[in-house]
Amino acid sequence: MVIMSSPLTFHPVLQRIAEEVAAAPDRGRPADYIPALAACDPHRFGMAVAELDGTVYGVGDWRQPFSTQSITKVFTLALDLAREGDELWEHVGREPSGNPFNSLVQLEYENGIPRNPFINAGALVVTDRLHTRTGNAADTLLDFLRAESGNEQLAINKDVAASEATRGDRNAALGHFMASYGNIENPVPVLLDQYFHQCSIEASCADLALATGFLARHGIRADGTRLLTQSQAKQVNAIMLTCGTYDAAGDFAYRVGLPGKSGVGGGIIAVVPGRCTLCVWSPGLDERGNSVAGVTALDRFTTLTGVSVF
Image 1 (cartoon, rainbow, N blue to C red):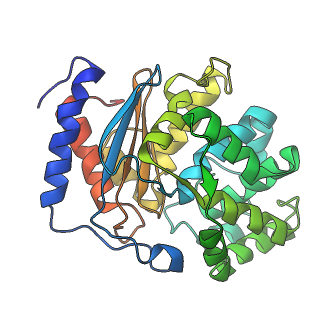
Image 2 (cartoon, rainbow, N blue to C red; image 1 turned 90 degrees about the horizontal axis):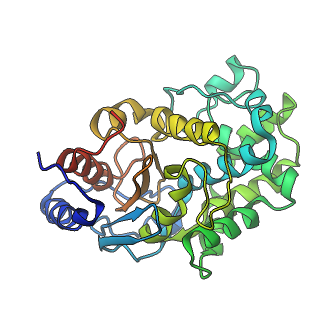
């Protein structure tokens, strides 16, 4: 093991990881059930590390924008939690699901209350509540990501949003089912439009590593203002650790040892509280919807550096 004494020495570690990933034979397959993502090259790879002061550096395709997808669930959770506090937890749980991210099964057993904010049903509830409080959840999220990343060029890919809408029947079913229990406040078509646009924001590893920095700074935004209390930041990080990689969260915690959130666009963000944030991207996914190279890269990062929450 090579234990690093300073974030500045992460550079050679990132380079070594990129070389190891390039030599790996299994890179997974892109999310072909979303037509706009099916053509992504699974051999693309980028990784970035952002320090607490906003210094960011990376390797490979770390400046290449990609479809953020479920990574955005972390930010909508934080934005809504900042507005309504613990009331949110009356409408969504905090436990791992153990089922696929778009499962309908648990909702019926649990009376329309999703198991956690990172499965699709839970994310729909959070987006719905954020939309009620802001008038436009997707635009509120986009403004936040632009501000935290310092990149005003971040945008929603309308083609990806439209592509998701054509395959959105399962999400529509989740929304209508929860609405039947009174757990959705806005019309389901409005909610779905917001949700699909939220997931279709494009950003790079550099952008997302920077935007996640408030969780490493215990709730403090890039401009020094507070978004979350220290306790709320701890809560978001804890849910990322236990629920952030679909039904593979236990294996991710075992291998990587950091709070993380993946998306089927191939990205994964990770947090080292009090030290730095990371984002890795490679579009090839495993059977559970997580980037094959991304999980490997984060596993190697924590192994080589000794940096972990454990």
